[in-house]
Image 1 (cartoon, rainbow over the protein chains, first blue to last red):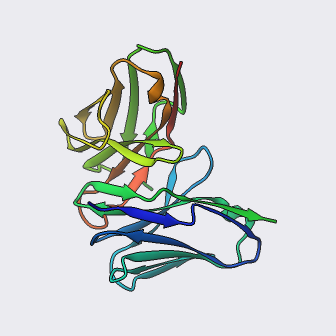
Image 2: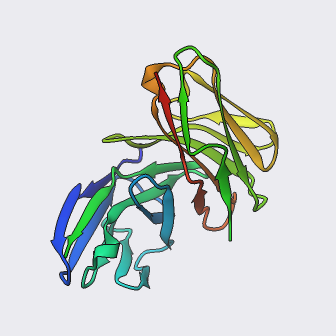
Length: 110
Length: 113
């Protein structure tokens, strides 16, 4: 059974600092997704990673995938307050089963 | 842009009422999903549909049913609402091939009193 573990669960960081969120998973999966959720809002897709070594970047966020280590990372560069949100990773198990991590609540302090 | 809409953002219902949550997507996606999201428990799949009139149970289907009469519309039904069904309900749709990326609706926060 596919299990997804994110850490840390909570992250409080100063503006301008760098940090990494980790997403570990238990079995092979073809696709890994990163989502952002603002308080009281729905999930917004950030990245889709499809192969080993895949790296995608958007602004201050960069996601990577290491399928051999069963690990994806979401790296935040020079954090700003607007990045405060909860970040989820998710993987597919089969064609419709999506398994979500528990989320990392990020708070960027001014 | 894919758009997934849900019929209500906030809903308050009484215990025992029948509740309908509706979801509509405009991208001709085959797959549609209903999740509930609770603090500390993440997103849990209630039901999934891969075609009109087709449905599959997810991880927590008890107390829920679904209906998909048209491709663009997927309804979640709480036959007799209970207080433990107070939650945020999220609808999503995705294509059945390619990257299988899910697109989420804005969510319905349901309170059952």
